[in-house]
Amino acid sequence: MHSASSRRDGAALDALNFFLADVRDGLGPYLAIYLLAEHHWDAAQIGLVMTLAGLAALVAQTPAGALIDGTQRKRGTVIIAALLVTASCLALPWTAAFTWVAITQSLSAVAASVFAPAIAALSLGIVGPRAFTRRTGRNEGFNHAGNAVAALLAGALALWLGPTAVFYLMAFMALASVAATWAIDPRTIDHQQARGLGGTPPAASAPALGVLLGNRPLLTLALCCALFHLANAAMLPLVSQKLALHDLALATPLTSACIIAAQLVMVPMAWLVGARADQWGRKPLLLAGFLILPLRGVLYTLSDDAAWLVAIQTLDGIGAGLFGALLPLMVKDLTQGSGHFNVALGAVTTVFGLGAALSAGLAGLMVHWGGYSAGFLTLAAVACVALLLLWVKMPETLPATDTSPPLARAR
Image (cartoon, rainbow, N blue to C red; front, side, top):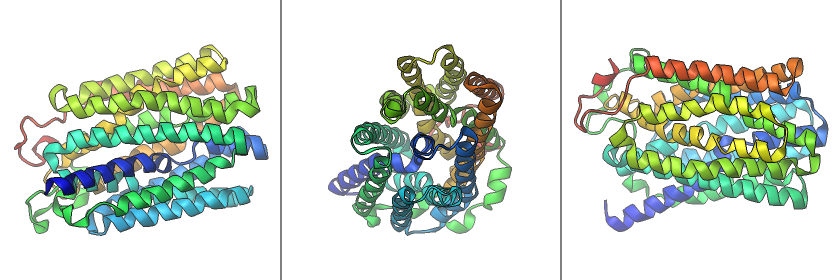
């Protein structure tokens, strides 16, 4: 690839990850604040609508990965999905009915399900497997920087215009991601390479179901990720609700402070993965990320002070920063040569999406029955199980050499 074209595509991928950051992760805690503050929903209702959106994303993830593996219109797929997210965001301030809120958030979650496999595929297709680790670290670094900037803007706009300003900001980010996607030169994308085939002809690839179900480390990784997200996904929304109950006017700005604090830590964590995961291995870094999660769950119960809650949220930057950068690398390691990298990534995302979808409902019920401390301690206990499983059952996935036999490590 010509160096000028390579630089343009690299800059476009940087911008795409930056602007998609807020769009990929959804409204999350901002939706919780909006529904609590503006429409007086209780924790159980908020948890249910977020669970429904998570389940919609869950159903869509594996088909989304298969779509990205099979299509050569990867840019167009990202653009259509971003436009659907934009429409869902702009519709939300106009309705408070449970049914319509659930529909808009579910539609947005389904559309957003293509972003993770699409970005991974575009990156692998453009830079190739040898440069994929560094590119993935860079992707996640820009993703977290985008989240930090978006959270800063959301906090400022919420003080000025109210909680609904967040929806318009997210719509703007989605439209900006469309422009970034359009800037990628489609001629530089190797679609065979993007699906993990390299030089192998499509007819030589194994059936996707066999690749997924016959790969024990991949299944173990998926289960670890599911437990991690069952423990993690509801923590920030619970913190947001505690902040809202303490001071409704400052809930959105303080939630933005929580997000910014974590995202600023995630940036160097992602760059660390890009720089060192090929030398240190994947598992030690992932264990460090999993170790932080139960610690956070316990620390949240020690004080209701806003400054304390924001400070503890910075620890999320270590866990989520390492996890986000390592996941596509480990899936690529375990599926290299299969031709099903993106469907495998989608399937793993489906499994951990189940954990994330159930997290809000589990936490909401525990808060309803025993208060916020019971909710946090329950999530911390789940995180301990995830850490133990990862430590005992998950092998290192880093290839011994760049030329190791395809799928040999997955048997």
